[in-house]
Length: 156
Ligand SMILES: CC(C)(COP(=O)(O)OP(=O)(O)OC[C@H]1O[C@@H](n2cnc3c(N)ncnc32)[C@H](O)[C@@H]1OP(=O)(O)O)[C@@H](O)C(=O)NCCC(=O)NCCS
Image (cartoon, rainbow, N blue to C red; front, side):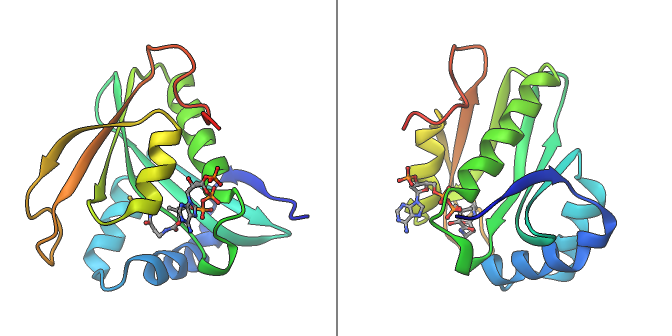
């Protein structure tokens, strides 16, 4: 049984987080990495197993009421064990604690695994953004309404 702790990012986690991001999203360029971690780190959480970082979620507060998930990944060998769900539900709970009413994210239309997780957590597709990704793929814009009861907890 894995003992996973979800905790705040610290600078010593930088290399691990970068590696997980590269593995999940290559090819992304360095400017984009810097953009996320330095500019957009309103809330950056990591999943830690015995001191090893195996996943992360980066959240940016857009305004007083809205947060956005800007990057989220679990190391390949640790996927499918509930770690993503833990990271996402913790990040959502922290948005709620910061008084946010809505959480947004973009996801590739082909990324069924992530979409399934987001729908389970109560996110709904609210728009399609054509050509959102560098390779021309469209994105779904998904939104979670935190003013509706029980939103942001796994629907199991
Ligand atoms: C999306 C991601 C973070 C999920 O992390 P994870 O730790 O594997 O997720 P969990 O184990 O908590 O699974 C949560 C839910 O995701 C879905 N899921 C996970 N693995 C799946 C698979 N292989 N096939 C279908 N659905 C799957 C299921 O709905 C699952 O819930 P369930 O276990 O109750 O059925 C991970 O797959 C990942 O890093 N993917 C690559 C990066 C990415 O796509 N990030 C999101 C960009 S928007």
